[in-house]
Length: 389
Image 1 (cartoon, rainbow, N blue to C red):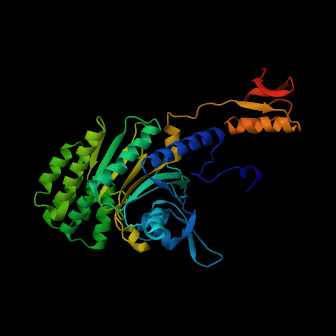
Image 2 (cartoon, one colour):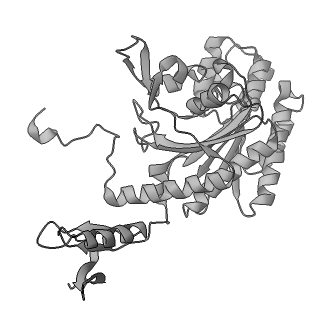
Image 3 (cartoon, rainbow, N blue to C red):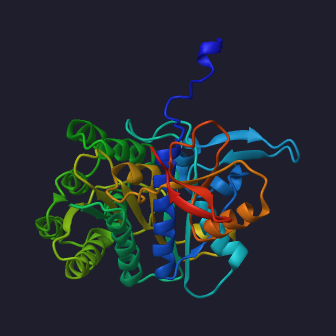
């Protein structure tokens, strides 16, 4: 690497400069205060853990996103977290071990081997909340409501909520009696919503199962989707109707709680399918081509840590919502302090800083550019006056 290359960062990895850092930190504090007002307690998991703890039970997708190394102390494999959710599940199941409902939140840096989408960062600051110990729709509604409140607190408007339920796809798979190889091929084609590839993958599958799988491709749109789903799964399709009715219940409650909320149904949404077990959801805003926040129900992930617990939660990238946010920290001036050894001056500075003022020691000929006031000595006392331009 030449000298001129040393300033470069890896693709998809960004540094956060002072102005943006101030905005990120302002929003982080506001959102963690919001979570606290809903009863969510802050946890701070470690940046790295043994890979078997980070990755167990969460599918191959997270494995591929995780940077791995060898621990020089133990010789075991370590991973730098690509997702904080499994860490919080471990804390709930093992470290806390509570038997009742537990509400936890977090905010911390993660690292990805590759971007999740073309627009995504490889170094997001993940912020989210998890609710453990309750299987009811009320818990799902609380988490979705908190996600919407999070985006509202960031000043984001015109939210579209994407709702799905992995139980629909699960039921269809059971009715098809597919081999693991067929399941993988169909899953891939359905994720890409490619009808030709899906039709090819269904060769040799029963006519009834083929109709159900292909029918999933058309089950996206407004509330009319639920009516079409009821017709498609009229024979119940191993529980698909139950999942559709749960979606209906949740959507009705959300509409009552959030009048004017735009809801888009997608019954073939397979995001996080390998560990989600129920309702899945994502929030979109105009002009941003990917989900800004997403989550869902993931019961029993804690089983690998010793306690199976019902769970639901959501996460977002703090840097992404800050970039889109209309809420910015209020511009603040600063006070220039003469570079003098004076105990009385030091006491005045301490009082100002305790009161929330920014006081910057004047080391150069001119004050720091942020300063709009200065400390001057008048009649034996240090007072703050406007800084002459």
